Structure formats: C-alpha cells, structure tokens
Amino acid sequence: MDKVKTEVLYGIHPVFEALSAGRREIRQIFHVKDNSPHGRLKDVVLLAEKLNIPVKKIMQKELETFTGTKQHQNIGASVSRYPLVDLEGIIRKENKKSEDGFLLLLDNIIDPHNLGALVRTALCVGINGIIITKDRSAAPTPAVSKVSAGALEHVYMACVTNMVQAIKMLKKEGYWIAGTDIKAKTSLFSSSLTGPLAIAIGGEEKGLRPLVKKNCDFLVSIPQSVMINSLNASASGAVVMYEAFRQRQFIITKKGSNL
Image 1: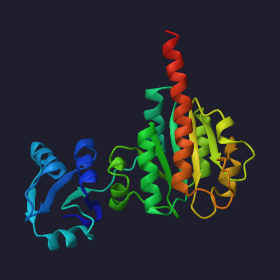
Image 2: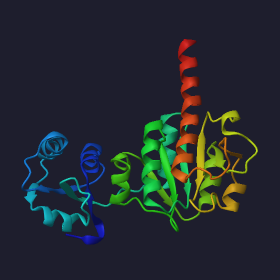
Image 3: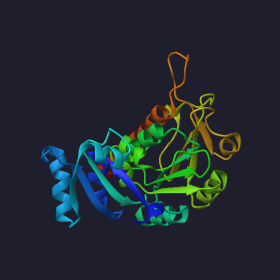
Image 4: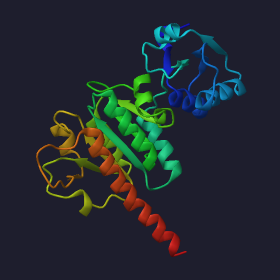
C-alpha cells in the first residue's frame, strides 16, 4: 500500500461521510472486534458493505495503533488522501452554479481545531469553496475531518501559494472580498454580504496579513459589548458566515415572495 497516497480516517462521522461523499477511494474499514456494530457504527458498516468495501474486525489496541489515537469511536478506514482541487476548479464550479458565489478564504489558520470548526460551519451555510494557504496553515488531515464531524468530506478546498494572487483572480471573476478586522470601523451588521462574495478570515495570532487586508474590497468588525478579548478565528468566522447566510437567505425569500 502506498503510504504517500494513503491516510487513516477515524471516527464515525468522518468515515460515514467519506463513504457518502464518494470523493475518496475507501480501501478498507476496520472496527473493534469485541463490539457488535450497533447504532451509528452499524450504519457505517452497512454502507461499506453496500459499496463492496472490505470490513475487518480487529482488537481495540490494534485499532488504536492503526489510527494513532484513542478517539477513534471504534472505527477507522484506510483511504486515499483528501482530494484538494485547484482555485480554477472552484471558480469553474461556481460559474456553473449561480452568479451568487460564496467562498471562504482562510489566511494562515494554523490550528486544526479551528480549521475543522470553520469547515463545519462553512458547509452548514452553503459555502461553495474554501481556499487555504500552503505555508503556515493547517492541512485537511483526518484530525480536521474528525473536528468537522465529517463536513470536510463534502467541501471543495483549494490550497494556494499566494493568497493575494488568489484574491486578485477572484476579483477578476466578479467576487467582492470581505475581510475581518477587529479594528475595522464598519460593523459586520451594517455591511452588504450578498452577491458573489469571498469572506477572508485571518490567522489565530495576528488576523489577516497586511497585504491580504490591503487587497480586500472592504473590512468588517464584529461588535462586542466588552472589548477585553476578541473572538477566536473559528468563532468569528462562524459569526461572519452566518450573517452573510442570513442576508442571502433574506434575498432568496424576498425574490420568492415576488414571484
């Protein structure tokens, strides 16, 4: 088995969603020998069998060694690596869907837990593509899939060398780039977040890098009653994404009521 092209997913949601999404090659499923599959675990095993994917029972310690963690929820899977796409592919996919593209730009998010949480929210609000940076960024690993509750398996993600160049390409395609900045004078709640939009979220330590911030079309801040500490990257990203989602849903509802 080619170790370079293989990784191990663990946890009920990541394995089930990988099976459901069909974007990875699932080579084999492993679950704990001592436990008869029931509940959600049984659903995973039944889906794997339906897809003719080999299922093997192994001992608890073997599964811990195989997955490299005790947080495996009695199941693991040998799979192909996460299928990144290129930025051009995301743009082409968007152009086919609608004129109201909705993207997420993550500038140096280094904590896998923050990346997983952002991915989970992104899927919930209908983000059509996520762009991360190649350097100083968490990668879409099995740990990220676990934190995202398997949402990673359904999102389209591109990894770019230069975020500024990616922003310039998106602008040429008609996107507006909204950056988050705690010092921005414009409140999130007074900003228009409809139409083709890419939301830029900065890293945990310093936020958006200066050049990335400079290339955003506008910056927004999240109002806080007490300015002791700002929200972390995943929390602030969730607030911004859901405000955009709220505005976009309102437009859809309004259009529907006028038909």
